[in-house]
Amino acid sequence: MATQTHKRIPVAVLGATGMVGQRFIDLLQGHPWFELVALAASEQHGGRAYSEATRWRLPNSEMPTEVASLPVVACRPEALPGVKVVFSALPGEVAGDIEEAFARAGVAVFSNAKNHRMASDVPLLIPEVNADHIAAIAFQRKERGWPGFIITNANCSATPLAMALKPLQDAFGVRKVLLTTLQAISGAGYPGLPSYDILDNVIPYIGGEEEKLESETRKMLGSWQEGQGFVDAPLAVSAHCTRVSTREGHLECASVELEREASPEEIIAVWEGYRPLPQQLGLPSAPEQALIYRREVDRPQTVRDRDAGKGMSAVLGRLRPCPIFSYKFVVLGHNTIRGAAGGSVLNAELCYAQGFLTDL
Ligand code: NAP
Image (cartoon, rainbow, N blue to C red; front, side, top):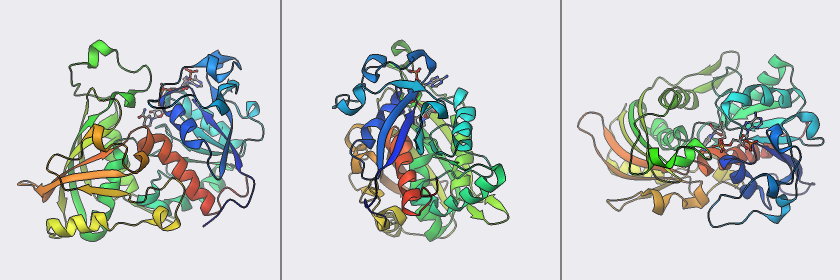
């Protein structure tokens, strides 16, 4: 594995004032390979200091002193000289063009936005699930003539689902998945939903979310084939997405149909024994256990389990036979860490460890 033998790579956060942007700032503090040197958001901040431009919203922490005085500049490559890697927490309305401008300028872009996720030359990457999709970067750079590149991470609900399914797919095959999500309000950004709309309420609709879950899961569990591109997994996914009044953590209730018979003990053993590449490489943000199975009848719970593995583990539980499909279970993932900023940082670490950040 690559170690800290060189100077840290200068990185910036785009959308630094938002929910995911603040998570990036928090996770990049003291990072062994990346040095956070610049912050960007919309033009409205006009270079004002971060502490004047926004308030710190993450619970149990203060705005890091290292960023309080950094100016909040515009999301343009020329405003971020010397930056080699950007972590994008931009909204989909603006992310597409801005991220492309950075890749064209020779910067590696690690994005949370939906815009490029399904592109035929852009990896939709979860290092524990499809690390080999990283090979698409060479094709992307050649195809688009970019000295930089774009890698995206998945929708915050698709992430824990794909992590739960991957070992099952490898061991038993997965044909169908039926899923209902209970998603936290932070998934809608800040300020997000009006309190009157979400307190004491469940909203059975999140625009575009069900489609993203269905298509992104198939792409991630599919393969990258040289000369052919991404090939979707032959898997039917049907999702119901709901917004509930939790702050962080998306809880998901899934039923799966497996291709081969398996006992509950075999399934749990496959989950608990899962040790994919980030854990083998010991990447700095990789949790010790990618998947944690809780045996208590009433776990995982959003408040109790979302911070497992510093918010980077997917927490599973309640595996039981399903009278319609093979099995049903519950999975929980921290949406702004595992499903957003932490996932992107892990993607960048995988690129660093595999030498993709050396020629920028
Ligand atoms: P958010 O809280 O609304 O933050 C959006 C950020 O983008 C702010 O920093 C905002 O800065 C900036 N911005 C807005 N308009 C801009 C413009 N025209 N030019 C440059 N910057 C602009 O949203 P979020 O929840 O952090 O989400 C960020 C991205 O991550 C979205 O694409 C979202 O879909 C994705 N994502 C979110 C989650 C989650 O759980 N929240 C999970 C996975 C993926 P200003 O202060 O200048 O307005």
